Image 1 (spheres, one colour):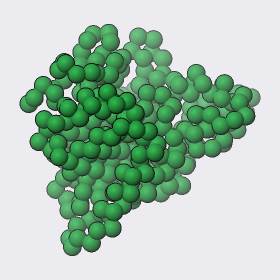
Image 2 (cartoon, helix red, strand yellow):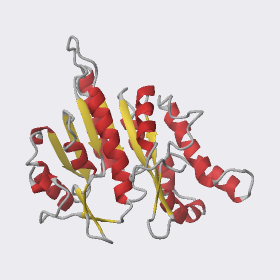
Image 3 (cartoon, one colour):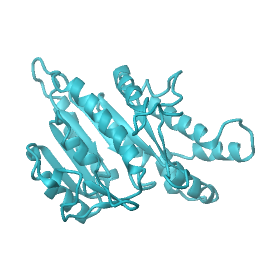
Image 4 (cartoon, helix red, strand yellow):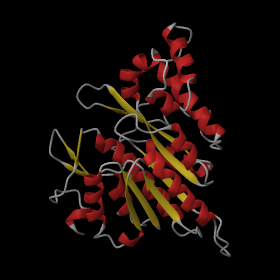
Length: 294
């Protein structure tokens, strides 16, 4: 396999990352593999992978210099590739590097690398998917879709999630920015104008929950309240499996490797129970193969 698709340096730009990136990417890689192994032989019209904050395709761990394949290349090199890929990033240099790496793949003709604001471009991507779903092909099902939403911070807007929910079969793996919210919520709460926190949650209800937590009117931690609120909104979009009686442990927490401070969680949403069965199998263990402590 070409060095562009291997976890090694290749002379192109890479995203600087902390060592914890390996844990996040391990969850993603295992979900992609179980998703595609189970579904590639089914009569789907198309199987789309959408990465709205794709980066350059490779990460370099700052502490060790180790190189990891980023989320787009993990999806591209899975044993059973998707039929179509949409990779988006606002940084043109990152997309140029990613496009060059993808060019050596056997499925490069099915890769779309796009520069721009993901919260805007997602509309065109979803319109394309809906056009596929409306095709009348005997014996074929509608498209099957997986979106990975993993920005560096609070760039993801709720409106983007609602757009992605329009196709029926759209699984979501969502970066919940716990560390970023810890740093910014207090400031955002004091502002009357719309903030990135309002855009992330798609409204101001989070402010009521934050005030309730701040005034010690609830036994729950702030992030339990906010994640449940987020999942309730997902449920309103048709993700009926978003709230589960056994949901404890379904939200892997990625921590800073040195300080052990919480960085972010991975939230999962699917409109079909099988998606959640896959996710539970994946999150049952961590990157080291150990049973995960919830």
